[in-house]
Length: 453
Image (cartoon, rainbow, N blue to C red; front, side):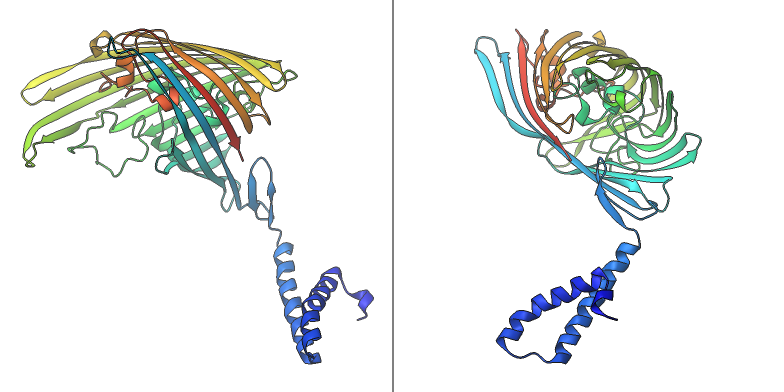
C-alpha cells in the first residue's frame, strides 16, 4: 500500500511518531526496528480510539452537558447552578427602646449539581440531585427513577416533590423574585419519599402520589419518628396527593417560569391539588441531666391541604395567583395534661411582571397569611415584594434585585411559634429576607447573581 493510499488516521499516526522520534534521533541513533515498534504501538492506540468512535458514543451540550450511546438508550445529563446572594435586613428592634436593628451579609443561597437521563431504554428515566443550602452540608435532593408506560402515563418512585404547590414545583432557577414567596415557605410540601402515577398530555397534566407525608425528605429509617427523642409531627403513616393542571394556551415549557419575552405567544393554565395525611402518631421523650426520663409527649395528627392557582404570560407580561389552605386535627397528651384542637390556616398571593426591555423584567407581589387563632400568635401577616431582573442569558444567567416589606409584626410567624400544628416552622431570613420583629416595620433587600450550567 502506497503512502497516498493511507487514510487520515494512519497519516496522523505517522506524523505523531515522527514528531516524537525526532528528538531521540538527534540525540542518538534509533534502529529501524525501534521505529517500527513505535509506529505499531501508535497505530494500535489510534485503532482503539477509532473503534470507540465507530461505536457511536456521543457527547456535547443540548441544554445540558451530556454523554450518550448512539441509540440514546443510555444517556447522562450533567447540570447545576449556583446562587450568590447578598441580603440586608432592617427592622425596628424586637426589644422596645433599644433602637433599630440592621443586619447584612453574603451567602451561597443554593449550590446544586444534578445528574439525570435514561438507562437501558429511553422509557426508563432517573434523576439524582445534590444540593447545599446557605453553604451548609450537601444532601440528596431529588433521587428517583421513572418509567414511561406510554400514552402519556408514567410511574415514579424515590425522593421528589409530590404534586401540591405550583410555586414549589417550578424550579429554584425560575423564580421571579430572588426566592419563592413567604406563603410558599410556610405551606411548602418540600420533598417526600414515595411513589407516583402521572399523566402528561398537550393540555392536561396530572399526578397521584402515595408518600410518607409533606417534607419527608432524608428521613433516616422506617419508623424512626416513632417513640424517639425527636418529634416530627409531619411523619405520616400514610399520605395521598393529587394534582391536575389544564393548559388553555401555550406549552408546558413556557409555564415553567413566570416571565415572557416581548415576542412570546400567549400561554396560560389553571391548577388545583389536594393532599391528605394521617395517623402521624409520634412520641417524644424528655430526659434530665442524669439521663432519667422525665416526660412523654404523645401526638396524633391528621392533615388536609388544598390549593388552586392560575398563571398567564405572553407579550412581555406575566401574572400568577395562588391560594392554599391547611387544616390540621391534632391530639396531644403531655404527661398528665392534655391539649389538642383543630387548626385552619390560609395563604394567598398574586404576582405580576412586565418585560420593559428585552433584558429587564420588573415585578411586584402581594401576600397574605391568615393563621388560626388557636395557634396563640398573631393571625394576619401581609408582605409586599418588588424588584427587577436583568437577564444576561435568560434564567441561565440573571441578576435579581428586590425588596420584601413585612406590613405586620412578624415575630410570631418568624419564630415558628405554633408550628407544632400544620406546617410553618419559622422563616429563614436567608430565604425570604425577613427575620421577624414585634413592632414597627421590617424590610429585607436581596441582590442575587444566578448562573446555570
